[in-house]
Length: 120
Length: 107
Image 1 (tube, each protein chain N blue to C red):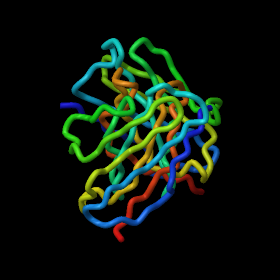
Image 2 (cartoon, each protein chain N blue to C red):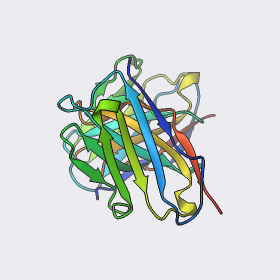
Image 3 (cartoon, helix red, strand yellow):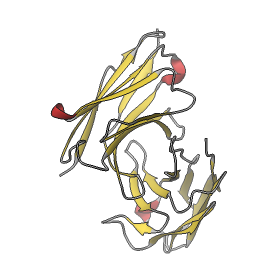
């Protein structure tokens, strides 16, 4: 079955770089049409789409965050990594990774999410 | 970026009620519209993709309609487990923006 799991630090200091890893199973990112996205949700707020990486290594970013985000994949390890530079307290959120399928580019499987707090 | 606007932001309803949530895109997105349900402390769950296709395992009381810029999620008979927050998302182009959410509460 398809599973995804986010991992990374629970606490990050302002100005530091945040690195999150999504480890997945049950599908391959080398399969045509498969993609993985990162989405975040500040406490009590709405979902915010951050980035997506496709099977062919195409990458897409949030317009407001693209200068701070980098997404990459390691197909052999079934991992997708998201880095965010120069974090500040407004980046405090639960970060999710999700599989994106060709079915209208919808996210059909999600990880449980990881809460990242940015504080000194 | 395409802006997605949901209405209402919240609603109160009773078990058995018919509930309708709307989502409007700031430009045409054909039928590239997905609906998700999120319960407190949980990851979102895909309900509807491509505006009207029911995700496997989702009860048939959920349905979606619309195309272009205006879309609707309908719950035909609200059940206790349906009290949650619902989000629309456009997947016509990146960034794949979400609506602000609609919280469905118990009346």
